[in-house]
Length: 229
Image (cartoon, rainbow, N blue to C red; front, side, top):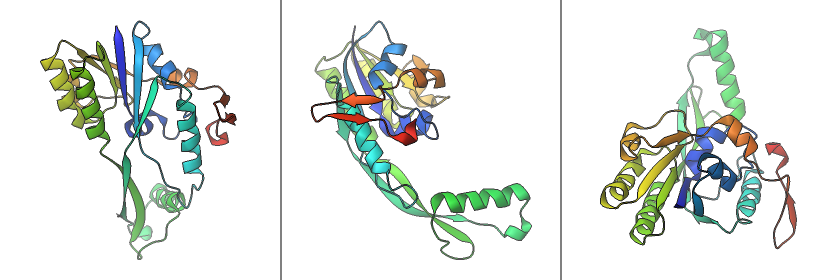
């Protein structure tokens, strides 16, 4: 069966990659592990270019290396959207009324975000949100289904906004949409849309689905970021 894969990069990162070193992820290997009997015709990866942060200046460089690694596979198409960055404020309670663990958590938060207090009780933090990923992914899914490009589609996400385009493809065609979830639980609307055809990404599979340490493209050789080892 011909399969098209639709990957919400933002959802994938926050669902199973954040805080782990296995970010040098070979998407083709990952999908083949869970769906070995499908012919993977196309992998569409939806993402956006990240910005440097005061506490992580090298973040954009790591992402560009990863996108370069993805581009070595002709099956993979990268569709870029944008991130919306807002400044939000966390209330910092009176430290004299906190327990030891609460005080430690506040100190950790201050150090992690590396941003000043906007006054004595609030901490200013940059919050990043994806913008248009679900719309782009849903539009590609519906258009590809309409053009008969696949027999089965795999959506890698846990975004409930994708439930409606998935439901439309499943109900209006003889095609099949399945879900590979980067989160341990599935949004109810998504589960219904895919008729509970769900698999979950496991940590051990992430570890064995990595690119090689050294990659080569038409420009030359490049290496996995040291932070991801």
